View: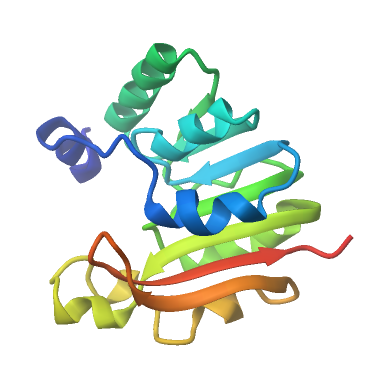
Length: 184
């Protein structure tokens, strides 16, 4: 049965360019390429960007339509990405270790402990997720999918915070943006 995400990807054009967080804030913090997990990666914009920079990305998303789009876009870009179609509300994250776990515009709080466990020593957890202030300008995403102000660091419990900020992005979203490193 098609999901609402399948419908959304059929009816709307998915962004091709990586989010500003990835290009501007995360990129300077990336060390040598390694294995990357793009959580809820949609149509593949971040996984493809990482592959173009020498990373070995795996992308997971619930929508089979998004996976098909990502596969076509990766082929057009001439890069390889591993694609996994799975609903993270009832599936496990892929086994690590991961040198980078990236989450952009997706919040499922119960995944974070497992993500931290799957990080390689020195690996980065990077996230950009809308906060409750986003409701000042946008009615979506709804409150269950928004971080409270100041909440993001608590999701990286036990990791070293190397970058953190909250504010309005160039994409007009009020986001918490965090990069945290697992100790070696």
